[in-house]
Length: 46
Image (cartoon, rainbow, N blue to C red; front, side, top):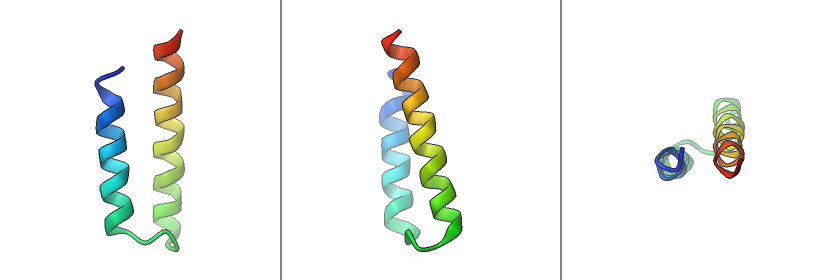
């Protein structure tokens, strides 16, 4: 799971740079990436 975390951060960072936050699609993407990252961290810490 540690391997996925930098990929998720990098992917969300590049998505942030390309897609403006005002669009609904990017809001959904941000929420999904945030939840996915949180789950990864939660599983890793257990």
